[in-house]
Image 1 (tube, helix red, strand yellow):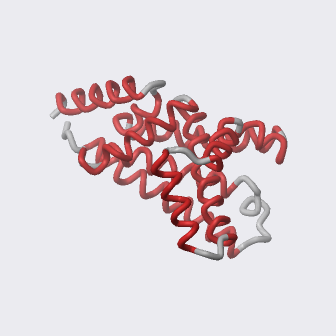
Image 2 (tube, one colour):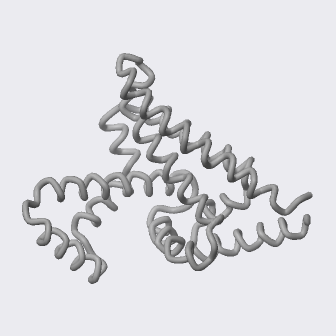
Length: 201
């Protein structure tokens, strides 16, 4: 078996998932009267797909390029746990951070003042707004159930789990690190999968 096969599978699956999410968001805008496309949790599922694609793509990047992003991913996943639950929490956090960023740009008249504040928070490694977003992301099931009901929560979780299971079956090497509870375990699983793949060459 060729050692490139798992990477070929990832290079097909990941762009396909991302393109599907983009297509759904465009269809939602163009066909707002469609009941399924108008579901309020569809954009959240698309954000999850983008987060999943981004996290899985890290294993395809060269080490010098992917290592800083990889450390950031490990830090966030260690807060919420591994697997689909933690990745959904990460997608919620990234969405909330983006919304906070957009809101800050809209409310701040002096762009230089906003940039200085952002750099100051980055340098000290702490942001009150990010802390609030992290807490909100940690309780994402409660937020969904409170806003949309249990049935919508189950539908959303099933759709996200389906993406996760598809990745597990099609590209286990790229997904192995997302299913471990600690950064050390994620790195160990990734190295193990790489050795097994190399041994098939």
